Image 1: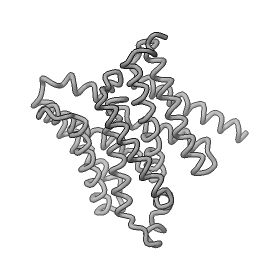
Image 2: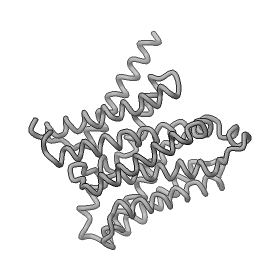
Image 3: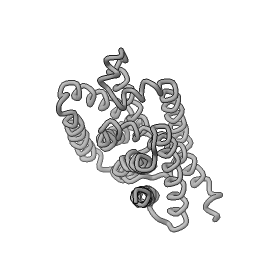
Image 4: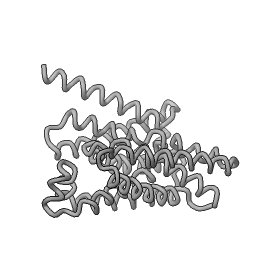
Length: 267
């Protein structure tokens, strides 16, 4: 149990606990709005920003955040253009993000090992600056969700009704996209860009299988996220496993249990 007293592990626990609040919460909104794949898209674009950050010697997470926010505006613009084919916007932006990342990888062969830590996660290397960024993102996301909870609820379940009632739908769509970009940029160093969508979607899938109301779903999605992240970190630390992969596999196990319990309850 000596690992619990290690400073790097304590930073990992703090960062993981914070991101386990915001990532599943934003994921719930995305899943309910049929936009689950937006997590993968923004994560790939963020990696392109991280690569550019290493190339120009600027804090990589900050550059990744800028890229993700720009991409979120791009997704919203394309969704407006292709209303009938909303998923097309996600595919286009993801393709562009991957293409740009591959070019930047070629230009900066010397830093590819550093970028890999963002692809697969490197929670044990979190610095105090990283924790400050994650804490700031958590505060921003929770504040906005609490302030606009009624508007976000209406937008999530019936966008047309929200527009008819006078809600500025475009503004809130962009706001949700920006919040998602913030969360993903903060999370990629914890679970990695390749796994960040799992932290967004799997807790949401678990909570939707178990909850009977939106309020219950919000509570369960955060609870499940916290349990999976903290337990995953502890297991990975004790058994010397990859933290990101361990967290995701735990989430999949929780989802399997949730689906089994739902079937048993129905029977």
